[in-house]
Image (cartoon, rainbow, N blue to C red; front, side, top):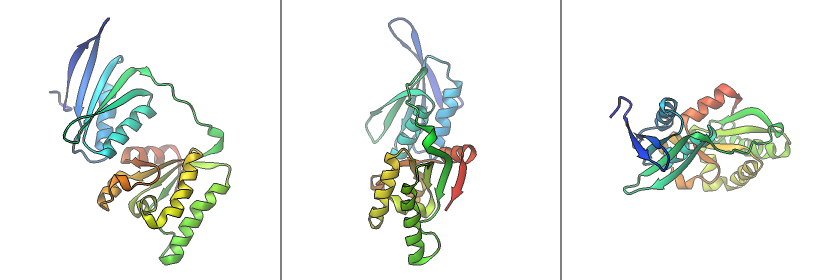
Length: 215
């Protein structure tokens, strides 16, 4: 076992040996599974395989999204005891269809609460703001819901707003809800009604590489 919690072995294929690295990311809090995966891939040589063990839906989605975003082929296999094995191939690039950059602004909107201001008026303003976004041809690249903002993507009383968010998603806007926030408010992941589960690594990446707007 190496200092980073993984070990190496060799898998003999028809023509050559494939190096396999394994890391165990079970029970690790966000964003550690993504950070461990990133570090392992950086240290792993090309034409090799990384196997990542996770035991939560948020870790599964976050690691797979990180791998796909960075051009690595990947697949997942469900195992016993709620565990999932993610297999990532390094050395063979995926074919990723680029989005139409001209229709998106280099902006990320961070929604930190379910209201713009206080009380009923704050709720009306928030829903109106996000609905009005549909009227524009140029849209932000990302909308990230954190803290009480995750109520807007999960609660039944926000179904009208959720439908608007689904329309934005259809038009190519990436929508994320903070996985740590969902856990904190004890919201099951299957109650997420639009978008994907986000993580701290992706959020920091967006903050550093796009213009961030906070609500």
